Amino acid sequence: MPYITPIVADALREHYDPALYPSLSANWPEGFLVATDPSDVPIAFLLGVHQVEGEGRVLMFAVDRDHRGQGLGTLLMNEFLARCREKQLRRVTLEVRVGNATAIRFYARFRFSVVDLLRGYYSDGENGYQMARDVG
Image (cartoon, rainbow, N blue to C red; front, side):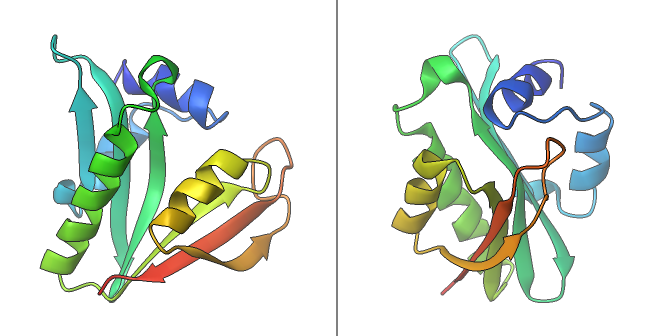
């Protein structure tokens, strides 16, 4: 967890208590994916949860700044979607900052589309988009 906290702070511009990660992943540990460097240091992660019947949610997803553009995000998202299919979930949702055009384009490549505007969603007051896609 000590390696994930700075990735979250940099990539997501949010600060969460490190105890939050294991508690959030407790109901579906297979939804918490971590990519590591050759020294087993985490450099990317996706924390997915299953809290609503038939639906998975990408709660947090970030790649360390020095490791972006290497396909890690694609690898993690593909694996997460495969695990959603295995669990027979029908839909996946996520939230993204409206100003994060790079992330929005990334999610669009995975067939996510904007379904709602979340006003003042982030701790700094920035709006968010809720995006969703069918798992199938």
